[in-house]
Length: 132
Image (cartoon, rainbow, N blue to C red; front, side, top):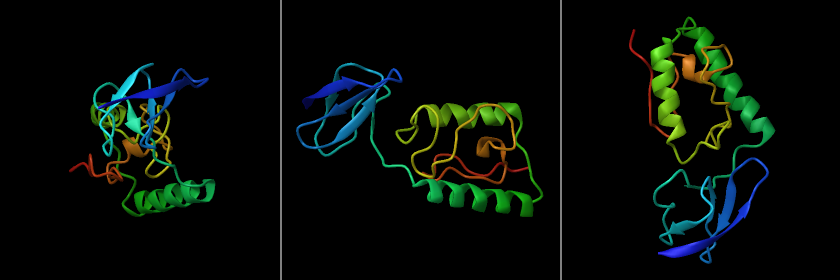
């Protein structure tokens, strides 16, 4: 287990770089990490490069088209809250968006929130479509 060198970012997070080359984004000032694995404990997570702007637009447009084709099924606020809780604990969540698909993670039940679309699934496989 190694101690990582952490530098503050301007959004309240820290970027920590381990001597093995792994970069971790964390809310903690001091992070310990097992080389070759994501950080252990806290909200630290291995940094994943999000998709490009074009990739984000494509991912969201594809999901929106599938959502409309499915009849725009919506989750209840309780289901949205449950999905949001999973995202908050996920290593791919950066505090605002998913690093896997690049889509915003919004707790409010809104059209721009894939968390509220009942036919959607997490790109990392942590939650799936809601049965109606």
